[in-house]
Image (tube, rainbow, N blue to C red; front, side, top):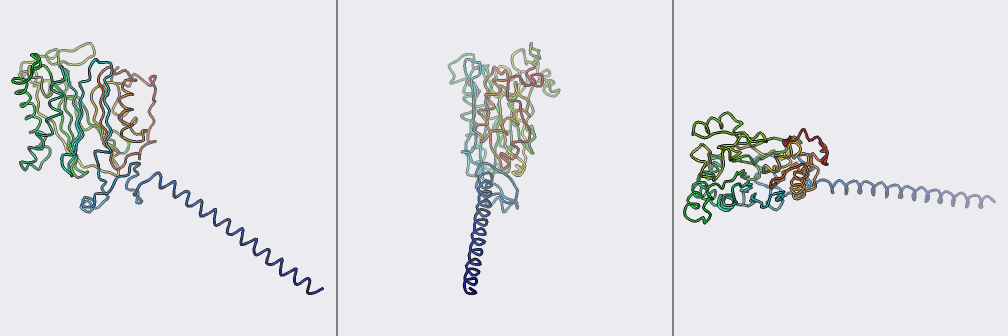
Length: 361
């Protein structure tokens, strides 16, 4: 009898031990599985940044030498990541032009041109401005602001000779274009040059940082130059100040018939350092977008998009939905913080959003 109880006790002990071991293995297996699931989800949402420098939904490789030089990770910005879109709107032709190009392995070129009075000037400048920039770089000019200032003047002068000797359209002297041009060197140094009312906006910390100032007669210095040169300023029924009753800007490329009246081709330039931990993207837009949407609305609209291609298409579509009748163009360059401010603010994505906040009203 004693032996029977001993056998039962030993077998019961073995059974309990096996049961405990089985439960322990099951718990550990599920715990590790949960941990790996969380890590997998985290890896889907983040890239190589494990130190919190940026949270980018686009896989950007590191620029090793630039990162060492600046003492922080610098992603390599590529033209393949840039989003572009241009829509005709409610016009019969699209006179907007844009360019995205790698001029050198360490230098990228982005530009938008908003033509008026015919497509000749926008076509010519979009095709030849980058060649003139390369000419000044080949001459050894290192300062990119100086390069852009020289290049804007040169392309305007070369276009004037082109119109005089090669253009078949007799009234092509009235053709002109805005130009907003950005050069990005080593993914860090950003230089902007512009004439007219196309804009460059930077999304930093989820807020809009305006990098250009519209060249219109609303500015005292611009108005004084026009009047001093013998030009006149007239106001249309939309409240725009028109040079000689025709041009809504005081600086442009082309518009050769208005150059004697103070319409200048001299570019405003500025440079700044891209802070990839804070800067989500750079966007270049023509006035078809700016006329219908505020700068912050543009920024918020891009921030809810998955990638720059979707963002550019969405911004131009929203401009139409918000009442724009002009050609609308957007070029979006993603930086290190792309996607970081996705939920920073919400934009009312419907036609019934507060129209009084729009530039149109």
